[in-house]
Length: 269
Image (cartoon, rainbow, N blue to C red; front, side, top):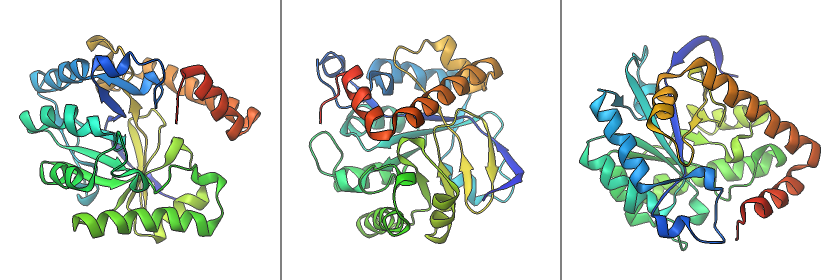
């Protein structure tokens, strides 16, 4: 387990899709609308960070520093590897010389709607650190040890082989994490594990365990400012919502929860 005595304060923003309005109006989608911001919204948020002097940092760079000083900084992360991260978000990040981290589902690379290896390589070269989100996106806590090893080592090796870089960060699918996953990830060479717990104080260690704050759809700049600032009342409410969701998952069972989730948000395969 990460050393809870050593802690880091850093708002880590979590994004998934950054899409055009035409995509957002589709009747059947591939992800929860709450996990998709418009390209216009994302641009406004990037410009807000610029105008308020907030520096972006890659998580790999933070973990490389013995005593990271992250005051006035924020980390931007993307999960899954949606192609619109390349077509919509990446140009804005590059325009404003901002760093970010892309957690890639290696089993989805090149599929319709997802980045290919050439696009991932271009993002890596342009200041977006490409890291692991496993191979298949299955929740790791429901897998046996050998399957967890396969997911973590397989995705890590695939990115390292294709991009010629070191992979040392993991975003756990669905934000689900337990001690087994932490231990296996550490042995596989990961130095940091990202979850979906909305916090700004993170436990450092080997590996570090890092929470993230989802930037939702239709997020006003006033709310965005509270997210970046780590507003305690907002984070408390988000943690309560997260705990309620986790309790529902436990009550229904993961598979039943996913069926209900897909029906609720009209998510297709």
